[in-house]
Length: 379
Image 1 (cartoon, helix red, strand yellow):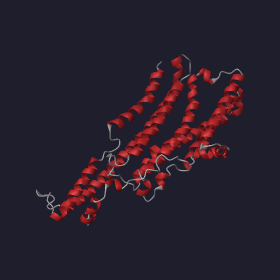
Image 2 (tube, rainbow, N blue to C red):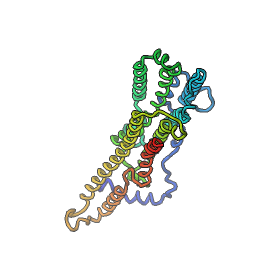
Image 3 (cartoon, one colour):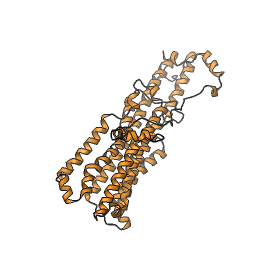
Image 4 (cartoon, rainbow, N blue to C red):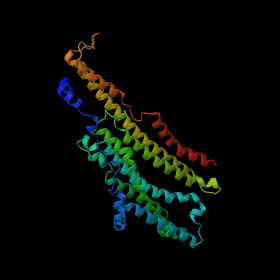
């Protein structure tokens, strides 16, 4: 019976009354903030090209992906820049100083990938996922192993299709120079591997994790003192992940449209504008999906719990649909009051995004990249 399950024995109440609240203890948050030392996909790829040995030889704990990015970006940029200068070709950074944002952005993408994955690990610890579901691995290991390889190989395939559409490496060398060939055959796949890592982590955080959470048996924590159902950590992570995308879009916008600020002619086509807008809209769609999924999940869980509590209430009260519906027998009155307190607590739980601050931060982040593009493009 519901009233028997929800009732608290008098002896137990007296026992708890005798305990000092500070002696009870709480959730051990030792796992939060600890270094996340699992290899990501790019770390595995970096180990295949020898960065694992270098990582192990260095003091401290330097992920192989960091070394991979530093070495490949540094070597390629030096080689391509020196070669262009040696043969009298214009150096890209002198043509467009904003192009310096490309290597900086690639390094930031490697850092951002590990930062987001580490923070997601901390989110699962803080939300106590392993204690709240029968299948925690679906939420703790959120990046499918096939996803990075599928994305990377698809991007590389498109790159080489475009290369051979231009006539292949020999034709590119004849029409341009060796730097262009290295760019198509080496640099682009390297940049693609770095972008793939960030893309898959971002997709996991904003698309896969919210959907798996919604479809899981984790439920909503209605005892959350913040009144957010215990979902604040993942909501904050979605917002944080989108900040990286905003920074990346602003950097791309400055590379494409920034030269006009310093009076440098730089070709901008309709296709460039279309691609930028498409990427921006896609990013908006991802964060919109995450927010909507979390909101829908909380709304459905609240309704389900309120319906359950209402059914219990109806069994406890006398003459539920009459004028005396609030009366209950004396032995049930305490249980009825507890049920109604729980209903109030559930009703008070806010659905993400719950505050003006969260809404304003998200909306501002969405507007900034497009605003930068429109403003700079008109200069």
